[in-house]
Image 1 (cartoon, protein in one colour):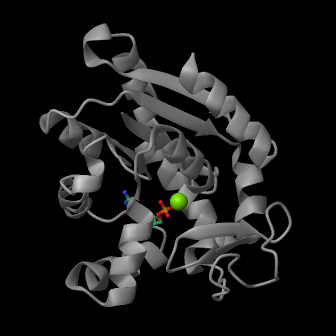
Image 2: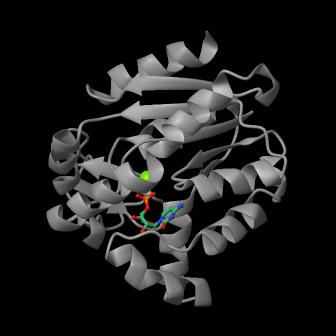
Length: 217
Ligand code: C5P
Ligand code: MG
């Protein structure tokens, strides 16, 4: 089972991904988390990517495509995988096709821009695990601390409002065309792809329920 989660930054992809992964017993491949891990480790990829990420821009297609290709070779992907935050461009989607990778579901999580800006300002992350919280909508048990490890929660530099607005612009220009792309695939039975659009406005529980219902029908 190969699943793509599509949607603007802050749509709740990461949070919902965890439920889908549990349901289908597949790993969550978050390219954003992988890039942040590379930045933290100071690897050559991380050094190259840091400025781009902090500015809210997209890293070059060939860099991220190589990263994903390597990742999906690992043994935990034998059942399939969920791609969270990839593909972000038509080029990246074409790269998956060139590899002969079949996408069973493309799930678009739809959230209006103004809601996103409100959400992002309250988002806090535990960097080493990728777990995310929201100070109001999904608070940790203890303020500023990760529920599982007790580690520090931070606000991502690229979650500040002006950067978020820029990331939304890039989303609409470069990533949103993938909605049409996968809708088209969904109309061709030979691709095996089913496109599903989900309303991402509401509580985490409500959105989880919508996705869960859509993925069995
Ligand atoms: O997916 P997420 O929002 O966590 O990604 C954070 C940042 O990482 C993006 O704004 C972008 O700079 C970079 N990124 C990218 N290409 C991807 C995934 C993430 O350039 N496929
Ligand atoms: Mg994410």
